[in-house]
Length: 420
Image (cartoon, rainbow, N blue to C red; front, side, top):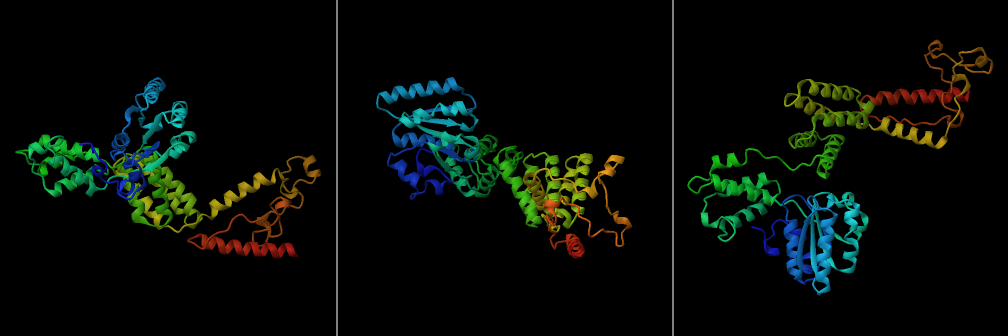
C-alpha cells in the first residue's frame, strides 16, 4: 500500500502541499540532497522512492543498521558507474543517524560532484546526530506524525484497493473502528495498516467487530524513545509544566513518560531537582516530599508507588516558586572563578596553635551568641575584596517572603553598623 504519487501520501500537507517548494521542485524533476527527519511511519522511505521516480533516477537503498563502510563503498561505486553513463542515482540511507562520522564523511565527495542525490532518513534530531559537513550539503525536511484523520484515509484506501490492499475481502468495518485503529497507531501509518491486516485475519464473516478490535489493540503504547529526542522533549515538558504551576499538564507528562516505559526512579530524581531548582526556599517541604515520594516508590514499586510520584508532581506544580537560591549559587560560583584565591579575613581564621594566635589568627572575632541580638552586625565575613557583595535575592513567594523580610532587615542593620 505504499503511495505511488505525491497525492497518495497522507498527513504531509505542510511539506508536500500543492504550493510547497519541495512539491514544485520534485514535479519539475529538480531534486536535491536532503535529510528527512520524522517519526516512524510518516512516509520517509516512500518520499525517497518518489524523489527517484520524479527525477527519473536509479534508486539504491542501504540501512545504517545493517550496513558498514564496505556496503557504503559498494553502493557509491555502483552510483559512479551509472554516473559515467550519464544517469543519476538517488542513494537512500535509512536510519542515517546510526552511521559514525567516518561513514557519513564517505558520502561527501560524491554529493559534491553530483554522483548521487543523497536522501537520509532519521527519527533523531539531525543537529545532534549528523555531522556538520553532511548537513551543510543537504536540506533538512521535517516530516510530521500523521494525524488520525489522515490515517483513516490510508486505511480506507487499503480496504478498497483490490490490487494491493484488502479490497477483494469486502470487509465490513465502520468509521468508528477505523478511527480507533488510527488513534491507536499514534501517528504511524505503517502501524495502522498492520492493525488493519491483523484485524482482517481475525475478522468473523468478513466483519471487523468490537471484539476483534479489542484483540488487535490490546497491547499498544504511545511513541517514546528512551534516551532519544522525544524522551528529552517530554521531560522538558514535565519540568516546564511544574515551573508554570500547571498541575494538569505536569500530571499528564508524568503519566505519558510512565506509560512510555520511562524508569520511575529517573522521574523521582528529576522531581527532586525541580524542588531544589524551581521551588527552593519558597517551600522547603517540596524537597522533603519529593524525597519521600522517591523512597515510597522504592518500597512499593509499580503500580502502587507511581501514585506517590503523581502526588509529588501535583504538589510541586502548586508550590510557590523561587529560583533565588539557584541564581545565588550560580553567581557565587562565577565570582569564585573570577576573583581567584582571596584570603580569609584574619578574625575568621582558626587559631589552634600559639604561633597562629601570635600572628593574629582569630583576633577580634566576635562570638555571635554572646552578642546582644545574637548577630555581630559589624563583623565582616566575606574577603575584603568582596565586602558588601550580595548573591542571594529572596523572592516574595511562599516562605521565602519571610526570609526576604529578615534578610533585608539584617542587611540594613549591617550597613548601619559599618557606617558607625
